[in-house]
Amino acid sequence: MKLLLTPLFITLFTLFSYSQKVKIDSTKFTIKHGDMTLYLDEDTNSYVSVHKISIKNIKKLDGIRSDKWHKEKPIGPYKLKYYENTGYDLGHLTPSNITSYDDTLNYHSFSLFNQSPQLGKFNRGEWMKLEKSVEDSIKKRNKNAVVITGVIYGNIKKQYLNNSRIKVPILYYKILVFGKKDYICWIGDNSSSKVITTNLHTILTTALKNKNKLNITF
Image 1 (cartoon, helix red, strand yellow):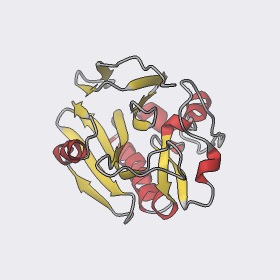
Image 2 (cartoon, helix red, strand yellow):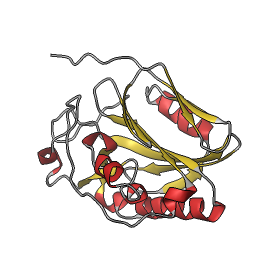
Image 3 (spheres, helix red, strand yellow):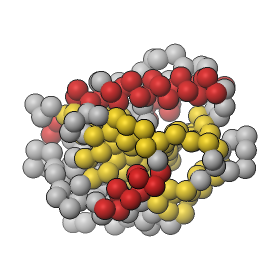
Image 4 (cartoon, one colour):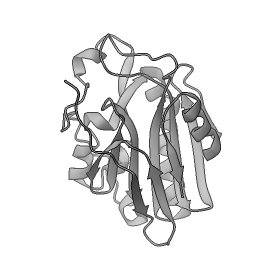
């Protein structure tokens, strides 16, 4: 039986100390957990995670993690058993460490909707370095920020995990936003594990090319 999802048309995220906003237009289902909002696609697979982080909170990171992956409603396709012996990790979208200023938020960072299959060497290699670089950039700039992390599925040629309904992304991307004209974008390949600096236009056109409905503006 298909799960009926409530359409989300426009969600606005206010960026703390300035008037600019991040806007994600989509028809995806959304789940909000305080500073973090999770987007799911029409198949209830992970899609985008948006994390608002203040400079005050980033200075409070203690690295203490929940480490308890858990399901939440709507019940999607994710089951831990499907990941066994695949070479794929449960790859966080919003990383657990950057939410360690708040125990409740850190718990929600281990929602199965805040992850997607990510090659182990990629997750624990170049992507982990990028996550640390994002934290360092926010501290260095000493500004509040919004971190957008998402995946792009190869929907022209779909790949699933272990004959499940779990879609395997071809790409991961991350956007660190300080203001309307002050942001940095990266994209990472879930096959080669390469991470490169890019721009918003490339992320959006790549998503469109692969039939991922995605529009992000700020």
